[in-house]
Image 1 (cartoon, helix red, strand yellow):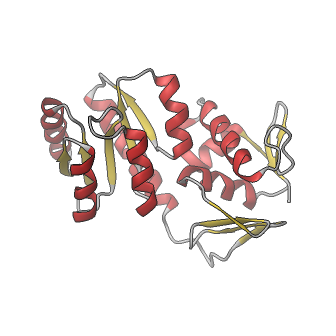
Image 2 (cartoon, rainbow, N blue to C red):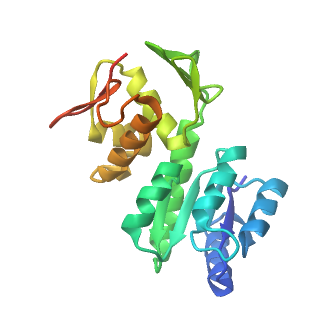
Length: 229
């Protein structure tokens, strides 16, 4: 069965063009021209992946991403003409899977979609005997997708959750940035360390009493990061 993609963008010409490209590539495609149409479409016919314009007229893409993540774990790729550096930090903290900066080529679009869908399938595959992961007072439940820290429930965006899970599975061991990129985002992201830096900072804000003086997620300078139980 073909993967279902939802394209949300207020540029009607771009929507028609991209929908045609995606359908020719074998995807089933739905479209929406604003956030409200998009949210209704998600409820009516849940997609496997959402292509989301960051500058919608009725709700900005970052706010819409928050709304989506309250209900489901659907991967999102932002389509943006804004300054990449500013939006990338905000979007990655919220859990967006990727960015494509307009204008972009058809080949780049299709390649990024394949990467994100493949990564989503891998991360959502059933985990073996998948009981909870415990590291001191940190408890991660992959099946329920929950994290508790000292008995307190911690809400994490999908990518931050995946990063914490990998660190906890290797508790006490130093993980290099490239190891984390490969295991959480995929080998395609090796060479983009900023992705890890942003997510580590966000995890520390959620888990550390004093994020600027971390006691749980330590930096081993010149090597990588280590979760300490």
